[in-house]
Length: 232
Image (cartoon, rainbow, N blue to C red):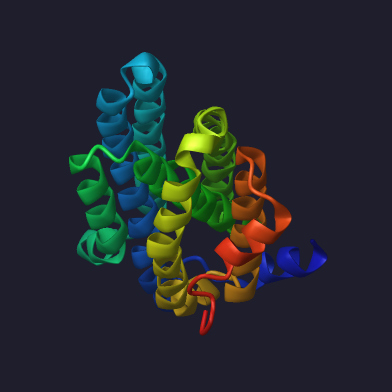
């Protein structure tokens, strides 16, 4: 904690280098929240029995998006949204394909597990090194993200026997994308005081805990977590 506090004190939030990196990192979180909103709306049509709860989650994501837009405005930064759309395009495309095929389990793995764990890891690593305004916003957001992760965990746990094989296949197809995303963002994240190794560690912890809560064994989790990790 002392080290991160020192890093935060050393960061110049108004330097051109910081603002340049922030334009992409901030765009990623804005786009991530926007896509999460759309994904939960799509899921609400696939899971009519949970429609009310999923619409509520989607509205929370829009609130988060507005919060992160305010963070950019506070630092006089314009978010690089075209970059962020390209950044998310592989997961976005996989979600759309799965939704079109009515593969609810795959959609939940992408949104409620992979994207939420990615967000939780990034936000937890960012909070200690954020500027005061962004720290307050992000602390509020991360509390909500655990609720979103919890929805996916509970539904998949309740349907584990039927969902297991599809979860394993969806993990195989989508987890390698996360490692590519982490590599792609590593240089900018470092400018903001966020180390790639810490991001990977936090993601793997959150993702492993989610898989455990759903019903996978330790051995299964280790095998599933290893997909695409080489070169991360």
